[in-house]
Length: 241
Image (cartoon, rainbow, N blue to C red):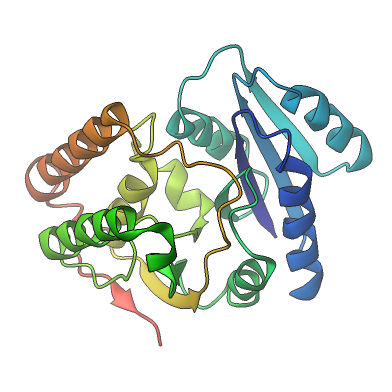
């Protein structure tokens, strides 16, 4: 049983397909029960109408609506409080995750506390973005001694442990913050290799404001994990093979 959080900001073209992919992957993984929460983060297109249609079609689809865009991390934190099921995953509403990779995540959902995916085709995003992602991941690997392949990977989280975290980031740093805090509190993890779907819409994650927020999240994590909360975050995560 998995709660899927779908982040949607002006995703009228791809939102329905994103929900279809989640449902198809759940069926392929043995009819995994889903609780889908769509976060409409201040969309100005037809996203709200599409959400209403999806809620009418599927009893397991719910939604959160923001009057203005306040950031993906803020929506994720709201969804954590609303989640019905013991496992929790976040996906963008732009149909970014291929069905095959989601299916593998669902099939391996009980392998460890965290089940993370990583991409074998990072270079398809261009040398700048792939290089930036590798550098970003390296800083986290080295600083926090966590041997994961991709810090912003799609991940199945334990909902109860997420609820005990103090997640600070309201923007794009939320994923790294949740992953690092859980791993450094002693959670086990399992990694799955897969391929990123070809991007169908321009990424909104690369901007000076977002980069500044990501850097601030990193520095806050260093302060909390390494200094103020070091007694709680003193554990080395255990990888399950």
